[in-house]
Amino acid sequence: MLEELRITGLGVIDDTTLRLSAGMNVITGETGAGKTMVVTGLGLLFGGRADAGRVRADPGRAVVEGRLRLKGTLGDAVRTRITDAGGETDDDGSLLLSRTVTAEGRSRAHVGGRSMPVATLSELGEQVLAVHGQSDQLRLLRPSEQRSALDRFAGPEHEKLLDGYREAFARWRRVVDDLADRRRNARQRSQEADLLKLGLDEITRVDPQPGEDEDLRAEVQRLEHAEGLRVAAALAATALAGGVEAADDTPDATTLLGTARRTLEGQAGVDAKLGDLAVRVEEAATLVGDVASELSAYLSELDADPARLEAIYERRAALRALTRKYADDIDGVIAWAENAKTRLGELDTSDELLEELDKERQRLAVTVGELAGRLTAARREAAVRFSEAVSVELAGLAMPHARVEVAVLTHAPARDEPAVTVDGEELGAGPDGADEVELRLLAHPGAPSLPLQKGASGGELSRVMLAIEVVFAGAGGPPTLVFDEVDSGVGGTAAVEIGRRLARLARTHQVLVVTHLPQVAAFADRHLVVAKDTGGAITTSGVRIVEETERARELSRMLAGLPDSDLGIAHAEELLAVAGKEKRG
Image 1 (cartoon, rainbow, N blue to C red):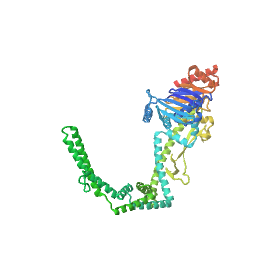
Image 2 (image 1 turned 180 degrees about the vertical axis):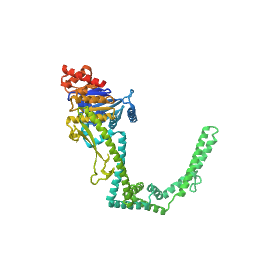
Image 3 (image 1 turned 135 degrees about the vertical axis):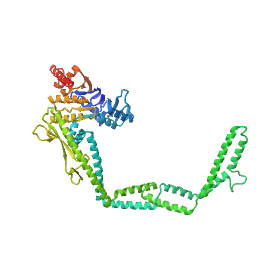
Image 4 (image 1 turned 90 degrees about the horizontal axis):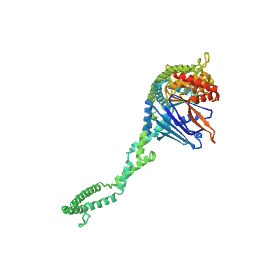
Protein backbone atom coordinates (compact mmCIF):
# COMPACT_ATOMS: atom_id res chain seq x y z
CA MET A 1 0.00 0.00 0.00
CA LEU A 2 0.97 3.67 -0.28
CA GLU A 3 1.97 4.77 3.24
CA GLU A 4 2.93 8.36 2.62
CA LEU A 5 2.62 11.00 -0.09
CA ARG A 6 4.44 14.33 -0.04
CA ILE A 7 3.61 17.05 -2.57
CA THR A 8 5.68 20.22 -3.03
CA GLY A 9 5.11 23.13 -5.42
CA LEU A 10 2.11 21.67 -7.28
CA GLY A 11 -0.83 23.97 -8.00
CA VAL A 12 -2.14 25.53 -4.79
CA ILE A 13 -0.16 23.05 -2.67
CA ASP A 14 3.09 24.54 -1.42
CA ASP A 15 4.32 21.68 0.76
CA THR A 16 2.17 19.02 2.39
CA THR A 17 2.39 15.39 3.45
CA LEU A 18 -0.44 12.85 3.40
CA ARG A 19 -0.01 9.97 5.82
CA LEU A 20 -2.22 7.20 4.54
CA SER A 21 -3.44 4.04 6.21
CA ALA A 22 -4.79 0.70 5.16
CA GLY A 23 -8.52 0.58 4.53
CA MET A 24 -10.49 3.60 3.36
CA ASN A 25 -8.78 7.00 3.20
CA VAL A 26 -11.13 9.90 2.45
CA ILE A 27 -9.95 13.30 1.22
CA THR A 28 -12.36 16.22 1.55
CA GLY A 29 -12.16 20.00 1.41
CA GLU A 30 -13.84 23.07 0.04
CA THR A 31 -14.10 23.59 -3.69
CA GLY A 32 -10.81 24.95 -5.01
CA ALA A 33 -8.86 23.87 -1.93
CA GLY A 34 -6.68 21.50 -3.96
CA LYS A 35 -8.26 18.04 -3.67
CA THR A 36 -7.65 17.55 -7.39
CA MET A 37 -3.96 18.28 -6.90
CA VAL A 38 -3.71 15.24 -4.65
CA VAL A 39 -4.94 13.00 -7.46
CA THR A 40 -2.71 14.89 -9.91
CA GLY A 41 0.25 14.27 -7.61
CA LEU A 42 -0.56 10.56 -7.50
CA GLY A 43 -0.69 10.52 -11.28
CA LEU A 44 2.73 12.17 -11.51
CA LEU A 45 4.24 9.81 -8.96
CA PHE A 46 3.17 6.83 -11.03
CA GLY A 47 4.33 8.06 -14.41
CA GLY A 48 1.47 10.31 -15.52
CA ARG A 49 1.91 13.10 -18.04
CA ALA A 50 3.62 16.17 -16.59
CA ASP A 51 1.89 19.55 -16.98
CA ALA A 52 4.38 22.37 -16.45
CA GLY A 53 1.45 24.80 -16.10
CA ARG A 54 0.64 23.29 -12.69
CA VAL A 55 4.13 23.95 -11.29
CA ARG A 56 4.26 26.85 -8.81
CA ALA A 57 6.45 29.76 -9.94
CA ASP A 58 8.25 29.63 -6.60
CA PRO A 59 10.30 27.40 -6.26
CA GLY A 60 9.88 26.65 -9.99
CA ARG A 61 9.58 22.90 -9.64
CA ALA A 62 7.05 20.41 -8.34
CA VAL A 63 8.17 17.35 -6.40
CA VAL A 64 5.99 14.37 -5.51
CA GLU A 65 7.44 11.70 -3.22
CA GLY A 66 5.85 8.50 -2.00
CA ARG A 67 6.60 5.58 0.28
CA LEU A 68 5.27 2.26 -0.96
CA ARG A 69 5.05 -0.97 1.02
CA LEU A 70 4.13 -4.14 -0.84
CA LYS A 71 3.56 -7.69 0.35
CA GLY A 72 3.20 -11.13 -1.15
CA THR A 73 4.06 -12.15 -4.70
CA LEU A 74 3.40 -8.65 -6.07
CA GLY A 75 5.84 -7.17 -3.57
CA ASP A 76 8.48 -9.75 -4.47
CA ALA A 77 8.02 -9.07 -8.20
CA VAL A 78 8.27 -5.29 -7.74
CA ARG A 79 11.35 -5.54 -5.53
CA THR A 80 13.06 -7.85 -8.03
CA ARG A 81 12.26 -5.46 -10.90
CA ILE A 82 13.59 -2.43 -9.00
CA THR A 83 16.70 -4.27 -7.78
CA ASP A 84 17.50 -5.39 -11.31
CA ALA A 85 17.23 -1.74 -12.41
CA GLY A 86 19.72 -0.66 -9.72
CA GLY A 87 17.33 0.61 -7.04
CA GLU A 88 17.11 -0.48 -3.42
CA THR A 89 14.38 -0.76 -0.80
CA ASP A 90 14.77 0.89 2.61
CA ASP A 91 15.88 -1.08 5.65
CA ASP A 92 12.22 -1.53 6.67
CA GLY A 93 11.35 -2.98 3.25
CA SER A 94 9.51 0.09 1.93
CA LEU A 95 10.22 1.59 -1.48
CA LEU A 96 10.76 5.32 -2.01
CA LEU A 97 9.50 6.94 -5.22
CA SER A 98 10.03 10.46 -6.48
CA ARG A 99 9.01 12.56 -9.49
CA THR A 100 10.23 16.09 -10.20
CA VAL A 101 8.77 18.44 -12.81
CA THR A 102 10.27 21.88 -13.53
CA ALA A 103 8.44 24.96 -14.74
CA GLU A 104 10.16 24.42 -18.11
CA GLY A 105 8.57 20.99 -18.42
CA ARG A 106 11.63 18.85 -17.66
CA SER A 107 10.88 15.72 -15.68
CA ARG A 108 12.96 13.31 -13.62
CA ALA A 109 12.09 10.12 -11.77
CA HIS A 110 13.81 8.27 -8.91
CA VAL A 111 12.94 4.81 -7.64
CA GLY A 112 14.69 3.24 -4.67
CA GLY A 113 17.31 6.01 -4.60
CA ARG A 114 18.24 5.56 -8.26
CA SER A 115 17.45 7.80 -11.23
CA MET A 116 15.24 5.88 -13.66
CA PRO A 117 13.08 6.55 -16.72
CA VAL A 118 9.55 7.84 -16.06
CA ALA A 119 8.36 4.69 -17.86
CA THR A 120 9.55 2.69 -14.82
CA LEU A 121 7.10 4.63 -12.64
CA SER A 122 4.35 3.95 -15.20
CA GLU A 123 5.14 0.24 -15.16
CA LEU A 124 5.05 0.25 -11.37
CA GLY A 125 1.81 2.23 -11.34
CA GLU A 126 0.05 -0.32 -13.55
CA GLN A 127 0.81 -2.99 -10.95
CA VAL A 128 0.01 -1.17 -7.72
CA LEU A 129 -2.52 1.59 -8.43
CA ALA A 130 -5.81 2.04 -10.31
CA VAL A 131 -7.44 5.46 -10.60
CA HIS A 132 -11.21 5.58 -11.14
CA GLY A 133 -12.47 9.04 -12.00
CA GLN A 134 -14.97 10.92 -14.13
CA SER A 135 -12.58 10.77 -17.09
CA ASP A 136 -12.55 6.98 -16.73
CA GLN A 137 -16.35 7.01 -16.82
CA LEU A 138 -16.32 8.90 -20.11
CA ARG A 139 -13.73 6.47 -21.45
CA LEU A 140 -15.97 3.53 -20.59
CA LEU A 141 -18.72 4.94 -22.82
CA ARG A 142 -16.64 4.04 -25.89
CA PRO A 143 -17.49 0.61 -27.39
CA SER A 144 -13.85 -0.44 -27.72
CA GLU A 145 -13.26 0.34 -24.02
CA GLN A 146 -16.39 -1.59 -23.06
CA ARG A 147 -15.07 -4.66 -24.87
CA SER A 148 -11.68 -4.29 -23.16
CA ALA A 149 -13.41 -3.89 -19.80
CA LEU A 150 -15.44 -7.07 -20.31
CA ASP A 151 -12.27 -8.95 -21.30
CA ARG A 152 -10.53 -7.83 -18.10
CA PHE A 153 -13.52 -8.85 -16.02
CA ALA A 154 -13.67 -12.29 -17.69
CA GLY A 155 -10.41 -13.28 -16.01
CA PRO A 156 -6.90 -14.56 -16.82
CA GLU A 157 -7.97 -17.69 -18.72
CA HIS A 158 -10.07 -15.54 -21.03
CA GLU A 159 -7.12 -13.21 -21.58
CA LYS A 160 -4.96 -16.21 -22.56
CA LEU A 161 -7.61 -17.19 -25.10
CA LEU A 162 -7.64 -13.61 -26.41
CA ASP A 163 -3.84 -13.60 -26.74
CA GLY A 164 -3.99 -16.88 -28.70
CA TYR A 165 -6.64 -15.44 -30.99
CA ARG A 166 -4.62 -12.27 -31.61
CA GLU A 167 -1.55 -14.30 -32.54
CA ALA A 168 -3.53 -16.48 -34.98
CA PHE A 169 -5.32 -13.45 -36.42
CA ALA A 170 -2.02 -11.65 -37.04
CA ARG A 171 -0.59 -14.69 -38.90
CA TRP A 172 -3.78 -15.03 -40.96
CA ARG A 173 -3.79 -11.35 -41.94
CA ARG A 174 -0.14 -11.49 -42.93
CA VAL A 175 -0.85 -14.39 -45.29
CA VAL A 176 -4.04 -12.73 -46.62
CA ASP A 177 -2.23 -9.46 -47.30
CA ASP A 178 0.80 -11.22 -48.80
CA LEU A 179 -1.35 -13.28 -51.17
CA ALA A 180 -3.40 -10.26 -52.21
CA ASP A 181 -0.27 -8.20 -52.83
CA ARG A 182 1.37 -10.92 -54.94
CA ARG A 183 -1.74 -11.20 -57.10
CA ARG A 184 -2.37 -7.48 -57.35
CA ASN A 185 1.22 -6.47 -58.11
CA ALA A 186 2.34 -9.47 -60.15
CA ARG A 187 3.68 -7.30 -63.02
CA GLN A 188 5.71 -4.98 -60.78
CA ARG A 189 7.03 -7.96 -58.83
CA SER A 190 8.11 -9.68 -62.07
CA GLN A 191 9.94 -6.54 -63.23
CA GLU A 192 11.74 -6.21 -59.91
CA ALA A 193 12.60 -9.91 -59.93
CA ASP A 194 14.10 -9.60 -63.45
CA LEU A 195 16.38 -6.77 -62.34
CA LEU A 196 17.49 -8.73 -59.28
CA LYS A 197 18.22 -11.81 -61.43
CA LEU A 198 20.38 -9.73 -63.80
CA GLY A 199 22.39 -8.44 -60.86
CA LEU A 200 22.75 -11.91 -59.36
CA ASP A 201 23.87 -13.35 -62.72
CA GLU A 202 26.55 -10.67 -63.04
CA ILE A 203 27.80 -11.24 -59.49
CA THR A 204 27.74 -15.03 -59.96
CA ARG A 205 29.89 -14.78 -63.11
CA VAL A 206 32.52 -12.74 -61.30
CA ASP A 207 32.22 -14.89 -58.14
CA PRO A 208 33.77 -12.40 -55.68
CA GLN A 209 35.23 -13.78 -52.46
CA PRO A 210 35.08 -12.13 -49.03
CA GLY A 211 37.91 -9.61 -48.66
CA GLU A 212 39.23 -10.35 -52.16
CA ASP A 213 39.54 -6.70 -53.18
CA GLU A 214 41.86 -5.97 -50.23
CA ASP A 215 43.92 -9.10 -50.87
CA LEU A 216 44.41 -8.16 -54.54
CA ARG A 217 45.33 -4.60 -53.64
CA ALA A 218 48.13 -5.89 -51.39
CA GLU A 219 49.35 -8.34 -54.06
CA VAL A 220 49.41 -5.63 -56.75
CA GLN A 221 51.48 -3.44 -54.47
CA ARG A 222 54.02 -6.25 -54.04
CA LEU A 223 54.20 -7.02 -57.75
CA GLU A 224 54.52 -3.37 -58.77
CA HIS A 225 57.46 -2.92 -56.38
CA ALA A 226 58.95 -6.39 -56.81
CA GLU A 227 62.44 -5.16 -57.79
CA GLY A 228 62.76 -2.78 -54.85
CA LEU A 229 61.52 -5.47 -52.48
CA ARG A 230 64.01 -7.98 -53.89
CA VAL A 231 66.98 -5.61 -53.48
CA ALA A 232 66.02 -4.70 -49.92
CA ALA A 233 65.53 -8.32 -48.89
CA ALA A 234 68.79 -9.42 -50.53
CA LEU A 235 70.86 -6.71 -48.83
CA ALA A 236 69.27 -7.53 -45.48
CA ALA A 237 70.00 -11.24 -45.94
CA THR A 238 73.63 -10.49 -46.84
CA ALA A 239 74.05 -8.28 -43.79
CA LEU A 240 72.69 -10.94 -41.51
CA ALA A 241 74.29 -14.09 -42.87
CA GLY A 242 76.96 -13.03 -45.39
CA GLY A 243 76.85 -13.62 -49.14
CA VAL A 244 78.64 -13.38 -52.45
CA GLU A 245 78.38 -9.59 -52.55
CA ALA A 246 80.03 -9.09 -49.16
CA ALA A 247 83.73 -8.21 -49.03
CA ASP A 248 86.03 -10.88 -47.67
CA ASP A 249 86.99 -8.77 -44.68
CA THR A 250 83.37 -7.75 -43.84
CA PRO A 251 82.02 -9.89 -41.02
CA ASP A 252 78.28 -10.74 -41.13
CA ALA A 253 75.91 -10.43 -38.17
CA THR A 254 76.08 -14.15 -37.39
CA THR A 255 79.91 -14.05 -37.23
CA LEU A 256 79.89 -10.98 -34.98
CA LEU A 257 77.36 -12.54 -32.61
CA GLY A 258 79.42 -15.74 -32.49
CA THR A 259 82.53 -13.78 -31.54
CA ALA A 260 80.62 -11.92 -28.82
CA ARG A 261 79.24 -15.16 -27.37
CA ARG A 262 82.65 -16.88 -27.25
CA THR A 263 84.29 -13.86 -25.65
CA LEU A 264 81.69 -13.69 -22.91
CA GLU A 265 81.79 -17.42 -22.27
CA GLY A 266 85.57 -17.17 -21.80
CA GLN A 267 85.07 -14.88 -18.81
CA ALA A 268 81.96 -16.57 -17.41
CA GLY A 269 84.05 -18.44 -14.87
CA VAL A 270 85.22 -15.13 -13.41
CA ASP A 271 81.78 -13.42 -13.37
CA ALA A 272 78.58 -15.48 -13.77
CA LYS A 273 76.72 -12.39 -15.04
CA LEU A 274 78.77 -12.51 -18.27
CA GLY A 275 77.67 -16.13 -18.66
CA ASP A 276 74.03 -15.05 -18.50
CA LEU A 277 74.69 -12.42 -21.13
CA ALA A 278 76.39 -15.02 -23.33
CA VAL A 279 73.21 -17.11 -23.23
CA ARG A 280 71.16 -14.11 -24.33
CA VAL A 281 73.62 -13.40 -27.18
CA GLU A 282 73.23 -17.02 -28.30
CA GLU A 283 69.45 -16.54 -28.36
CA ALA A 284 69.91 -13.40 -30.47
CA ALA A 285 72.09 -15.36 -32.88
CA THR A 286 69.39 -18.00 -33.21
CA LEU A 287 66.77 -15.29 -33.93
CA VAL A 288 69.01 -13.68 -36.54
CA GLY A 289 69.49 -17.06 -38.18
CA ASP A 290 65.71 -17.55 -38.34
CA VAL A 291 65.22 -14.12 -39.92
CA ALA A 292 67.94 -14.83 -42.45
CA SER A 293 66.21 -18.10 -43.42
CA GLU A 294 62.85 -16.33 -43.82
CA LEU A 295 64.46 -13.66 -45.99
CA SER A 296 65.87 -16.37 -48.26
CA ALA A 297 62.45 -17.99 -48.54
CA TYR A 298 60.86 -14.57 -49.26
CA LEU A 299 63.38 -13.99 -52.11
CA SER A 300 62.65 -17.37 -53.63
CA GLU A 301 58.88 -16.78 -53.54
CA LEU A 302 58.94 -13.14 -54.74
CA ASP A 303 56.99 -13.11 -58.01
CA ALA A 304 57.70 -10.53 -60.66
CA ASP A 305 55.65 -12.21 -63.39
CA PRO A 306 54.11 -9.47 -65.66
CA ALA A 307 51.39 -11.92 -66.76
CA ARG A 308 50.25 -12.36 -63.16
CA LEU A 309 50.18 -8.59 -62.69
CA GLU A 310 48.05 -8.16 -65.81
CA ALA A 311 45.63 -10.86 -64.62
CA ILE A 312 45.21 -9.07 -61.30
CA TYR A 313 44.52 -5.78 -63.07
CA GLU A 314 41.73 -7.45 -65.01
CA ARG A 315 40.30 -9.10 -61.90
CA ARG A 316 40.28 -5.81 -60.00
CA ALA A 317 38.53 -4.10 -62.90
CA ALA A 318 35.79 -6.75 -62.77
CA LEU A 319 35.40 -6.28 -59.00
CA ARG A 320 35.28 -2.48 -59.39
CA ALA A 321 32.44 -2.89 -61.88
CA LEU A 322 30.49 -4.68 -59.13
CA THR A 323 31.26 -2.12 -56.43
CA ARG A 324 30.15 0.72 -58.72
CA LYS A 325 26.70 -0.88 -59.06
CA TYR A 326 25.94 -2.75 -55.86
CA ALA A 327 28.00 -1.66 -52.84
CA ASP A 328 31.08 0.19 -51.63
CA ASP A 329 33.23 -2.93 -51.25
CA ILE A 330 33.21 -6.62 -52.14
CA ASP A 331 31.81 -7.69 -48.79
CA GLY A 332 28.92 -5.31 -49.43
CA VAL A 333 28.41 -6.81 -52.90
CA ILE A 334 28.19 -10.30 -51.40
CA ALA A 335 25.66 -9.05 -48.82
CA TRP A 336 23.60 -7.45 -51.64
CA ALA A 337 23.52 -10.78 -53.43
CA GLU A 338 22.27 -12.58 -50.30
CA ASN A 339 19.55 -9.96 -49.79
CA ALA A 340 18.60 -10.22 -53.46
CA LYS A 341 18.12 -13.98 -53.12
CA THR A 342 15.84 -13.43 -50.12
CA ARG A 343 13.89 -10.73 -51.93
CA LEU A 344 13.43 -12.99 -54.98
CA GLY A 345 11.67 -15.47 -52.73
CA GLU A 346 9.36 -12.69 -51.53
CA LEU A 347 8.62 -11.64 -55.12
CA ASP A 348 7.67 -15.10 -56.27
CA THR A 349 4.31 -15.07 -58.08
CA SER A 350 4.42 -18.58 -59.45
CA ASP A 351 1.21 -20.59 -59.57
CA GLU A 352 2.72 -23.15 -57.21
CA LEU A 353 3.49 -20.56 -54.53
CA LEU A 354 0.15 -18.81 -54.89
CA GLU A 355 -1.63 -22.12 -54.48
CA GLU A 356 0.45 -22.92 -51.38
CA LEU A 357 -0.30 -19.50 -49.86
CA ASP A 358 -3.99 -19.90 -50.57
CA LYS A 359 -4.03 -23.23 -48.74
CA GLU A 360 -2.23 -21.61 -45.78
CA ARG A 361 -4.78 -18.77 -45.80
CA GLN A 362 -7.67 -21.24 -45.67
CA ARG A 363 -6.05 -23.27 -42.89
CA LEU A 364 -5.42 -20.18 -40.76
CA ALA A 365 -8.93 -18.86 -41.46
CA VAL A 366 -10.35 -22.04 -39.93
CA THR A 367 -8.16 -21.57 -36.83
CA VAL A 368 -9.14 -17.90 -36.49
CA GLY A 369 -12.83 -18.77 -36.91
CA GLU A 370 -12.66 -21.47 -34.22
CA LEU A 371 -10.87 -19.16 -31.77
CA ALA A 372 -13.25 -16.28 -32.56
CA GLY A 373 -16.20 -18.57 -31.78
CA ARG A 374 -14.67 -19.58 -28.45
CA LEU A 375 -13.96 -15.93 -27.68
CA THR A 376 -17.55 -14.94 -28.41
CA ALA A 377 -18.89 -17.73 -26.19
CA ALA A 378 -16.52 -16.74 -23.37
CA ARG A 379 -17.56 -13.09 -23.64
CA ARG A 380 -21.25 -13.96 -23.54
CA GLU A 381 -20.72 -16.09 -20.45
CA ALA A 382 -18.75 -13.27 -18.79
CA ALA A 383 -21.40 -10.76 -19.90
CA VAL A 384 -24.05 -12.63 -17.90
CA ARG A 385 -21.90 -12.64 -14.76
CA PHE A 386 -20.93 -9.01 -15.25
CA SER A 387 -24.55 -7.91 -15.79
CA GLU A 388 -25.71 -9.72 -12.66
CA ALA A 389 -22.90 -8.29 -10.52
CA VAL A 390 -23.48 -4.71 -11.68
CA SER A 391 -27.24 -5.00 -11.30
CA VAL A 392 -26.80 -6.17 -7.69
CA GLU A 393 -24.67 -3.09 -7.01
CA LEU A 394 -27.28 -0.83 -8.63
CA ALA A 395 -29.95 -2.21 -6.32
CA GLY A 396 -27.91 -0.95 -3.40
CA LEU A 397 -27.41 2.43 -5.05
CA ALA A 398 -31.10 3.37 -5.02
CA MET A 399 -31.70 1.91 -8.49
CA PRO A 400 -33.42 -1.36 -7.42
CA HIS A 401 -35.29 -1.89 -10.69
CA ALA A 402 -32.44 -1.00 -13.05
CA ARG A 403 -30.42 -3.55 -14.94
CA VAL A 404 -27.25 -3.30 -16.95
CA GLU A 405 -27.06 -5.62 -19.92
CA VAL A 406 -23.94 -6.44 -21.87
CA ALA A 407 -24.69 -7.07 -25.53
CA VAL A 408 -22.08 -9.13 -27.37
CA LEU A 409 -22.81 -8.49 -31.05
CA THR A 410 -21.37 -9.87 -34.27
CA HIS A 411 -21.53 -8.25 -37.68
CA ALA A 412 -21.11 -9.09 -41.34
CA PRO A 413 -17.71 -8.33 -42.90
CA ALA A 414 -17.19 -4.88 -44.37
CA ARG A 415 -16.87 -4.55 -48.11
CA ASP A 416 -13.52 -5.72 -49.50
CA GLU A 417 -12.54 -7.06 -46.08
CA PRO A 418 -11.69 -10.75 -45.54
CA ALA A 419 -14.19 -12.74 -43.50
CA VAL A 420 -13.97 -15.72 -41.17
CA THR A 421 -16.55 -18.43 -40.64
CA VAL A 422 -17.78 -18.67 -37.05
CA ASP A 423 -20.27 -21.44 -36.31
CA GLY A 424 -21.22 -21.61 -39.98
CA GLU A 425 -21.72 -17.85 -40.37
CA GLU A 426 -19.41 -15.46 -42.24
CA LEU A 427 -18.43 -12.61 -39.93
CA GLY A 428 -16.12 -9.64 -39.94
CA ALA A 429 -13.17 -10.11 -37.62
CA GLY A 430 -10.57 -7.79 -36.17
CA PRO A 431 -7.57 -8.06 -33.84
CA ASP A 432 -9.89 -8.40 -30.82
CA GLY A 433 -12.30 -10.94 -32.27
CA ALA A 434 -15.54 -10.96 -34.23
CA ASP A 435 -17.52 -9.14 -31.53
CA GLU A 436 -18.66 -5.66 -30.61
CA VAL A 437 -19.57 -5.13 -26.95
CA GLU A 438 -22.14 -2.59 -25.82
CA LEU A 439 -23.24 -1.78 -22.28
CA ARG A 440 -26.97 -1.07 -22.11
CA LEU A 441 -29.21 0.18 -19.32
CA LEU A 442 -32.79 -0.78 -18.55
CA ALA A 443 -33.66 2.01 -16.13
CA HIS A 444 -36.89 0.31 -14.97
CA PRO A 445 -39.16 -2.56 -15.98
CA GLY A 446 -40.71 -1.95 -19.38
CA ALA A 447 -38.08 0.64 -20.34
CA PRO A 448 -36.21 0.07 -23.59
CA SER A 449 -32.67 -1.29 -23.46
CA LEU A 450 -30.51 1.67 -24.49
CA PRO A 451 -26.74 2.31 -24.65
CA LEU A 452 -25.48 3.85 -21.41
CA GLN A 453 -24.87 7.30 -22.85
CA LYS A 454 -28.48 7.42 -24.08
CA GLY A 455 -30.34 5.51 -21.41
CA ALA A 456 -29.11 7.17 -18.21
CA SER A 457 -29.46 10.63 -16.70
CA GLY A 458 -26.43 12.35 -15.19
CA GLY A 459 -27.03 11.03 -11.69
CA GLU A 460 -27.94 7.56 -12.94
CA LEU A 461 -24.84 7.43 -15.11
CA SER A 462 -22.62 8.23 -12.14
CA ARG A 463 -24.19 5.43 -10.10
CA VAL A 464 -23.99 2.95 -12.98
CA MET A 465 -20.36 3.79 -13.55
CA LEU A 466 -19.57 3.51 -9.86
CA ALA A 467 -21.27 0.10 -9.77
CA ILE A 468 -19.15 -0.96 -12.73
CA GLU A 469 -15.98 0.33 -11.07
CA VAL A 470 -16.83 -1.50 -7.83
CA VAL A 471 -17.37 -4.74 -9.75
CA PHE A 472 -14.07 -4.28 -11.60
CA ALA A 473 -12.18 -3.55 -8.40
CA GLY A 474 -13.77 -6.49 -6.63
CA ALA A 475 -12.57 -8.80 -9.38
CA GLY A 476 -8.95 -8.20 -8.34
CA GLY A 477 -6.48 -5.77 -9.79
CA PRO A 478 -3.99 -3.45 -8.06
CA PRO A 479 -3.93 -3.27 -4.26
CA THR A 480 -4.52 0.51 -4.12
CA LEU A 481 -7.70 1.98 -5.65
CA VAL A 482 -8.28 5.72 -6.10
CA PHE A 483 -11.81 7.07 -6.62
CA ASP A 484 -11.82 10.71 -7.71
CA GLU A 485 -15.32 12.19 -7.20
CA VAL A 486 -17.03 9.29 -8.94
CA ASP A 487 -20.00 10.07 -6.68
CA SER A 488 -20.70 13.35 -8.49
CA GLY A 489 -24.44 13.88 -9.03
CA VAL A 490 -25.43 11.46 -6.26
CA GLY A 491 -26.98 12.19 -2.89
CA GLY A 492 -29.29 10.93 -0.16
CA THR A 493 -29.65 7.19 0.36
CA ALA A 494 -27.57 6.43 -2.72
CA ALA A 495 -24.67 8.37 -1.21
CA VAL A 496 -24.77 6.21 1.93
CA GLU A 497 -24.77 3.10 -0.23
CA ILE A 498 -21.73 4.41 -2.14
CA GLY A 499 -19.89 4.87 1.14
CA ARG A 500 -20.90 1.37 2.25
CA ARG A 501 -19.58 -0.19 -0.97
CA LEU A 502 -16.33 1.69 -0.88
CA ALA A 503 -15.87 0.62 2.74
CA ARG A 504 -16.49 -2.96 1.69
CA LEU A 505 -13.79 -2.67 -0.98
CA ALA A 506 -11.46 -1.28 1.70
CA ARG A 507 -11.52 -4.64 3.48
CA THR A 508 -9.35 -6.11 0.71
CA HIS A 509 -7.79 -3.00 -0.86
CA GLN A 510 -6.31 0.29 0.17
CA VAL A 511 -8.92 2.81 -1.00
CA LEU A 512 -8.38 6.55 -1.53
CA VAL A 513 -11.57 8.54 -2.09
CA VAL A 514 -11.82 12.19 -3.05
CA THR A 515 -15.42 13.16 -2.29
CA HIS A 516 -17.78 16.03 -1.52
CA LEU A 517 -20.37 13.76 0.11
CA PRO A 518 -20.47 13.55 3.92
CA GLN A 519 -22.32 10.24 3.64
CA VAL A 520 -19.26 8.77 1.91
CA ALA A 521 -16.69 10.50 4.12
CA ALA A 522 -18.36 9.06 7.23
CA PHE A 523 -17.13 5.57 6.29
CA ALA A 524 -13.45 6.57 6.29
CA ASP A 525 -10.83 4.76 8.32
CA ARG A 526 -8.69 7.88 7.93
CA HIS A 527 -10.12 11.30 7.08
CA LEU A 528 -7.85 13.92 5.51
CA VAL A 529 -8.93 17.50 4.87
CA VAL A 530 -7.40 19.81 2.27
CA ALA A 531 -7.64 23.38 3.55
CA LYS A 532 -6.74 26.70 1.91
CA ASP A 533 -4.64 29.37 3.61
CA THR A 534 -5.40 32.84 2.21
CA GLY A 535 -3.58 34.78 4.92
CA GLY A 536 -0.48 35.52 2.87
CA ALA A 537 0.14 37.15 -0.49
CA ILE A 538 -0.27 33.78 -2.23
CA THR A 539 -3.03 31.25 -1.57
CA THR A 540 -1.70 27.86 -0.50
CA SER A 541 -3.25 24.60 0.63
CA GLY A 542 -2.25 21.92 3.10
CA VAL A 543 -3.58 18.53 4.21
CA ARG A 544 -4.26 17.45 7.77
CA ILE A 545 -5.80 14.41 9.47
CA VAL A 546 -9.04 15.04 11.36
CA GLU A 547 -10.33 12.84 14.17
CA GLU A 548 -13.03 12.79 16.84
CA THR A 549 -14.83 16.17 17.17
CA GLU A 550 -12.85 17.72 14.30
CA ARG A 551 -14.18 15.05 12.02
CA ALA A 552 -17.78 15.78 13.03
CA ARG A 553 -17.19 19.50 12.35
CA GLU A 554 -15.85 18.70 8.86
CA LEU A 555 -18.87 16.52 8.08
CA SER A 556 -21.12 19.31 9.37
CA ARG A 557 -19.41 21.72 6.99
CA MET A 558 -19.99 19.30 4.14
CA LEU A 559 -23.64 18.83 5.14
CA ALA A 560 -24.69 22.45 5.57
CA GLY A 561 -21.65 24.66 5.17
CA LEU A 562 -21.80 25.32 8.94
CA PRO A 563 -18.96 23.55 10.78
CA ASP A 564 -20.03 24.97 14.17
CA SER A 565 -23.76 24.29 13.88
CA ASP A 566 -25.00 22.16 16.77
CA LEU A 567 -27.65 20.63 14.55
CA GLY A 568 -25.11 19.97 11.79
CA ILE A 569 -22.66 18.39 14.25
CA ALA A 570 -25.42 16.22 15.68
CA HIS A 571 -26.31 15.04 12.18
CA ALA A 572 -22.64 14.38 11.45
CA GLU A 573 -22.23 12.35 14.62
CA GLU A 574 -25.26 10.32 13.65
CA LEU A 575 -23.70 9.64 10.24
CA LEU A 576 -20.46 8.56 11.91
CA ALA A 577 -22.33 6.24 14.25
CA VAL A 578 -24.27 4.62 11.40
CA ALA A 579 -21.10 4.19 9.34
CA GLY A 580 -19.23 2.73 12.30
CA LYS A 581 -21.99 0.23 12.94
CA GLU A 582 -22.06 -0.75 9.27
CA LYS A 583 -18.31 -1.32 9.21
CA ARG A 584 -18.33 -3.36 12.39
CA GLY A 585 -21.18 -5.46 11.00
